[in-house]
Image (cartoon, rainbow, N blue to C red; front, top):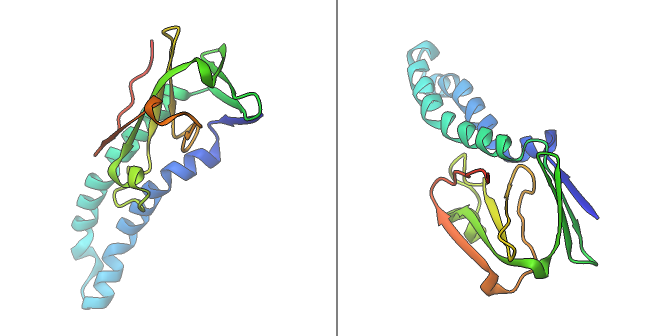
Length: 169
């Protein structure tokens, strides 16, 4: 069984673009000042604007995904085609045959298999709808790319600019 949990690796895999934006903003004034022979302090306002525009949206999305799947465990048994999902201490076990359909929410670039352009392009989430009416949200912090082996008509891909997830009550 392959087991997925939110850990340091998943935070870094999803949040690496946030770190890159912060680093670029930190070094931007010095690089431009060196190239253009200017004082770095005269360019710090540009870095501030870049930080304000580039960090809050992916950070908000990262926190949204974290609080939806905080403490969750997703287990998948390939041979048995069975999923074991623990959410808020409650464990549900179901097979792929019990899935009515899934909705995959992803950015245009992620859906097309292209590299990310914006800091939040790699964030994606999947909502699993079971035939018995239950539904589960699995964010990319828990499982980076939940690509279940289902028939095509059971997979609905929804592409968008910014993929905010809603918790299941």
